[in-house]
Amino acid sequence: MLSNYTKEFAYNLRLAYPVILGMLGHTFVAFADNIMVGQLGTAELAAVSLGNSFVFIAMSLGIGFSTAITPLVAEADGAGDKVAGKSALKHGLVLCTLLGISLFGIILLCKPFLHYMKQPAEVVELAIPYLELVAFSLVPLIMFQAFKQFSEGLSQTKYPMYATVLANVINIVINYLLIFGSFGFPKLGIVGAAIGTLASRFIMVGYIWFLLKRKEKFQFYVTGFNFKAIEKRIIDKIISLGFPSALQMFFEVAIFTAAIWLSGVLGKNAQAANQIALNLSSMTFMVGMGLSVAAMVRVGNQKGLRKFGELRRIAQSIFFLTLLLEVVFAALFLIGRHWLPTIYLDVDDVINQMDNTEVIIIAAKLLLVAAFFQISDGIQVVVLGALRGLQDVKIPTFITFVAYWLIGFPVSYYFGLYSELKSTGIWLGLLLGLTASAVMLYIRFNYLTKKLIRTH
Image (cartoon, rainbow, N blue to C red):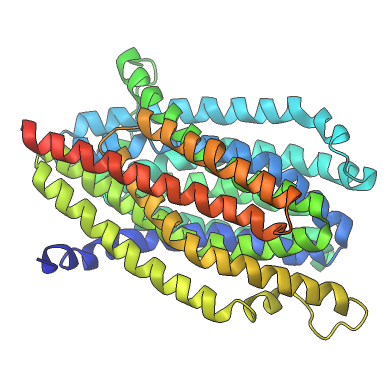
């Protein structure tokens, strides 16, 4: 019966919407940063883009790793075991802090590579001080992720959203004051943008801890940590879940970063069109990310309760809801593919009219492909969330590697650089990789849940 699945929609959306809004908040900050820095000039905008490409890959590893905390907390919550939930948070917090510091150190060691990336010298000069500060902001960001994943594991998705919204407001205010030197503040240019990011991330981690500590039902979990009593068994458990999850996220982020690099080889107009299509796609992807968290939490709960028939039904209701929403997004992309790129460009600019027209034509072709990969991208991320809820991470990591790097990337590379398809060819590779990932991950989920139902 269809109603077996549709009756879960309201609860699934209630769980997912704060996560979606929080994720969109991050995207919005990047959007606001780009608009503000863009006022300074193209070299500054290129420097921020170059610096962020390093930070973004490190961030994907940190965020991917932290997702290990959610299924452990959700399972403990389902089984009514508060001590196990607190232990998962404490050990997760220690590991996330160490990982944040390590990623900061690795980025500092990678700084010399900026000089060998065939980037304009003035861009590299601007990017280095920006990169140092934003790399340091990974430490509070990944600590925040530990609290965020813990909160989501208890089905409390609102508190991380509040902290993210506050951080976004603070970031934009500091940016305004320090990028342009408003109200007597020093004019620091893109270093001002980096200070905004760093300060807002420290405030974000402090604020979520304050919010959780104030609530009676979380007090037991977030106070009185004994960091001397660290258990190797729990550390090993989090690493065995977190490391493959980090790789899954890394494989996907890296193929999109490769698409940016390949587009750059084709020229600035191709790169601008790629950036527009990518920005639009990343906004709709946040809906999939939110539903992925709902899948991870609800599957984790049912696993703790050992109700495997319910687990399968609830997960499939989330897959069905995702499919319906992504079909709507696909239709919007198809209908608006010629109009949407014009939001990003000054259509009345006579001097750059030729370039702008070319960018809009290329971007419209990419959005045609993006319409179809909405569906694949949404499904693959939600099934991945359900598999994390089952604490199945090793095989899905192998699946994502094969889908993106053995199937998707070779197609992107060949059709992008060696065929008439050019930019569209790059995106056909992305579509193929995402579709292969969605199909193989669903087969894995289907196999595991049927096996659990049979054996219990």
